[in-house]
Length: 435
Image (cartoon, rainbow, N blue to C red):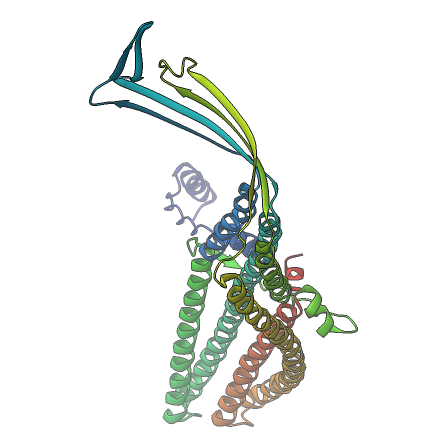
């Protein structure tokens, strides 16, 4: 081609518009990442069980108001309009005397105020104790719900790691399948070796799909606990802090809400018995009333008032108070036994959780050692297999051993995290996970 023709071809090429390529498909929207702290914060406001517990706290807060209502002023009003069958009128020298008018109206406004009310005072004190007991029990229930959410989150994280392990397994089996196919086509490998590589690759893909479905199912459970759609990704959380202190058993007795609730329940049982004893004492109060009635001959003033002091004293009630005291004494014994049982269970949970954590840490260390050895073994066998110094069965065995070791390490790491969470919950310091 002459230089002139070459130049003309270049000019024509520049003048011809380049074909327009179709736009690349937009990537799928990235899911929002949900951290462990965000999950726990969301559970505090969105979890339906916690919303039920919060409603119970609000209901329990009314116990003291109800108790105070028996001691605070009571004001009542009543009124009545009646039409009698006939009016009653007597003639008198000075004029007719109305005894009963045809239309009769009357009303009253009355105020009662307790001055000395031993039963009401004890009822108020017991209401505060009952409110604290309910509040401690609900605190423990709320912590148990948050503990379950944290367990779900760590479980989802471990399944996410397991999916990553299965993905690496798929990559390795595909490489083995490709090598086996090349060898078979070159005549240095057997058909049996190629089929075995294809079977391993198909099994790895099946395991990956199962792991992905398990991950999605666990994420759905977490989303249900948070009352939100499962449109989020998660990040691998850091290991929860291990509780420290010279005496974790004593920390559990000092921090656990259920232990505090049992102690308050025992005090409440004593308070209820004292309230029954207070029924032997009289109650003293004052009252005032402002009345209105239809005027008549003998009541020329429509409005009247009265004030006074009232004393109430139940001297004999047929043995009801004595029976109630004996009944409450039995409830005190029950509450005392329950408190000691709760204390014992709290200490036992701490000891069991410590043993579980020790075992989980030891197992994780061995799993980590096994994974390191399996990785080195897989590397050496892979080099030997590519060099023709190892069989496919040896290569497959090294890959399977590595997969099992990595899966085991993921499981043991999860066990350590869960054991740490259990110990935190047993000690009563679970809120530290959210700091």
